[in-house]
Length: 398
Image 1 (cartoon, one colour):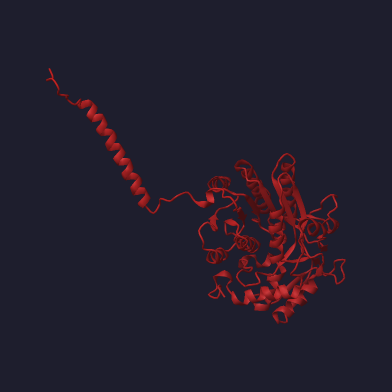
Image 2: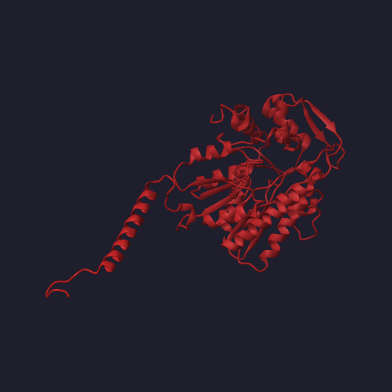
């Protein structure tokens, strides 16, 4: 029986309180240890939307065109995430961009394959994108005729995955980098709404991807811009980026790359396929667009994109040049008398494709500025000479 004026502590109550205090101390200790751990970090700025900052996902951003687009976006104060599986892109291009823009929250690179739907969904769930600039694609006409399934999977299927994920995560804007390879001559010139006539798997795969986007857009408020273009040339005028295709892909690559390889002696000469087309000199006619102009068109498309609207634009100079003209310009630009072998036609090539840029000039206020073919080739040639091993060259930062 307790004595008057004296309280005795309940041992059960004290034991319970002690356990709570001990648990609280352990939790506090764990939090402190986590904060001191290298693996602990605050949420990334890339994972949240920020007023006044537009976060753009650039698929294929380690590639030739994608890296130049990322450079322009970063210069214009966009926040950029590059996603690339490096099957065609170059990590060296990403490293140069990282050196040029080292500030936190400006640029991040994520290694991933768009064919992996789980990886794509994870990237979108962990990042707050305001727009997607979709460049990632295999893009060689000749290769597409040899391995069409690769092209339908890489272009059409992967675009569907990106679009579905954008819808799931509520990303409002898509800038789709397409091609004139899907179009007949008349359509690429005039943009009249008649039937498309793609004649190679690359063009067909791009057309299917466009059809998916346009069908989806009929009942969507997404802002969509589709840019169609053909032969891209040139490189960053300041010499920071260039084109460095993998050696095993040289046979299928752009004519500018083949010209430079011939000028450097990597290949014995240049092979021109097809001299019997119904053109002025028998060779194909193309609209060659400088990469700097091309990315400028993509940025203007991003700036002008509006919810619920879709814009489709041809991007080019509006002037066609024959392959023979191009070769002569390359000879002058490199100063090398390149040997030329004329061979039969390559499957899947059009005789003549060049754009009518009237619509993009009127609606986006865009006009090609780098239209001197020889000058664009000279700029690209300077990069090639100072990067003899591509981005792996010891002179890569020159």
